Amino acid sequence: MKNIQWFPGHMTRAMRDMEAKRELCDGVVCVLDARAPIATVNKNLNKIFGEKPVLYVFNKADLSDNNKLDGFVKLFERQGRYCVKCNSTNPSSKRVLLQKLNEITEEKRARAQAKGLNRTFRFMVAGIPNTGKSTLVNLISGQKRAKTGDKAGVTRDVRWLKCGAFDLLDTPGTMPPAFDDQYHARHLAYIGSINDDILDMDDIALELLGELASLYPAYLTERYGITDFSEKLGMYEALCKRRGFILRGGEFDYERGAKALVDDFRKGRVGKICLEDPSDYSDYTL
Ligand SMILES: Nc1nc2c(ncn2[C@@H]2O[C@H](COP(=O)(O)OP(=O)(O)OP(=O)(O)O)[C@@H](O)[C@H]2O)c(=O)[nH]1
Ligand SMILES: [Mg+2]
Image (cartoon, rainbow, N blue to C red; front, top):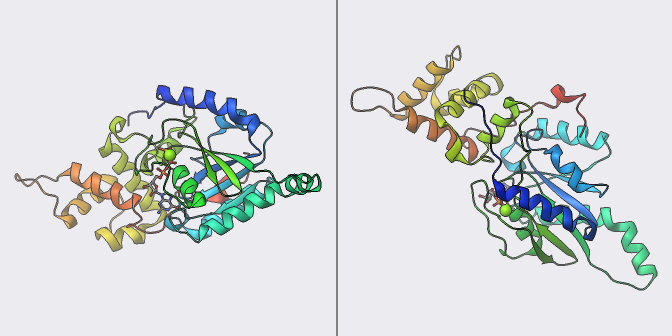
């Protein structure tokens, strides 16, 4: 399949702006997608984060496989990182997020209070496109002030938003300039972190089907009646058949099939899925 590559110009500008704001920040909130925790780590951002404390938010936890996710939380915590599982569309996540931000700034706050100061703390909210950064900022602020949307590249400029005791810098999603490997790049395509316009959706759907068949075959049986997992094209055709995606000449409508599968996956209709397994990453360093 065609190599995935996406690094639009606004990301270079965003990274420059983020770097310029770093020294104003007390820490960073790095928003990951809980369905692809490793693919959504952008190590290229480490340079921008510098030595600031980083809270890794496993966002969209409501769509992920909790067992695997717990494994990733442990893996990251073993490396001394702050971590939290979160569903930014659910108001109950606000409390856990605030708790973590308070924990990270506790010492600084105590020092400020000892001097009689009551200062605001600032965090940069960063990550790959479409992981839910703006939704998280809105959740903490209690108002829908940042624009959100279910596609990659909605936020175009860095912007400070007052969120109670914190000021949060919402930032545009940023990609590494090149992907180390296409396996993780595909995960970003499945979850909608890469602009769909540059993707070959047939390819993406076929690869996703292959991964789901090896990770969660029962989900494919349940939703699409797929029982033979021996080859991807056969599964694709079974899906089209089940959903009635047949063209007038009797051929399969692959385009509709691809769209339906990817859409179902993104909306959590296939099941709660984590594409990566913590046991494969025991040597992984952040
Ligand atoms: N199910 C679920 N959906 C979420 C969650 N957080 C965000 N979303 C949805 O994910 C989509 C992307 O959210 P945004 O907040 O726009 O993402 P972003 O990271 O700001 O995206 P960019 O600005 O493009 O980088 C929206 O449709 C949100 O409603 C979550 O925790 N769970
Ligand atoms: Mg945004």
